[in-house]
Image (cartoon, rainbow, N blue to C red; front, side, top):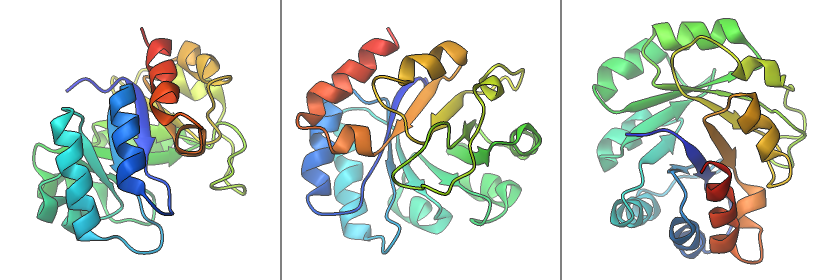
Length: 194
């Protein structure tokens, strides 16, 4: 499974399924199901089926049990979402991603615990998490031997900066799902990685 390209993270709000379908049509590389208020197994199942149709890995945010129940391709955990080593045991060969914020030591520990990829951010000021700590671009020039994802305030205009700094993936919510043409926006991101 190649972890490179646009990592779409579902927004809160209505018509998630319709929006995700457009993003998949545009060529996203990964899809993360993220609901900060309340996850819905039915909604997640619908998105999983869509992702499968496009052969795109489906990741569940911060919920190992839901990921296992759905048969998702993986789970992504932040610092308050549980122990990575325990998650690795439960997830077996599934993808395990870890939020590492602005800290290389956290990324190294995550890789040692079995993470398949690490995410650094917020790289830029983000409308989703305005108070998030900022991660310097220098974090993407590392010897972790694992794919690195940039998250936080990523737009089509600043994505080339993080890609040239060494990011394998860019995680995007607002700049993708708030775009007037979601499929075209996803395709524009895809081109950045070609």
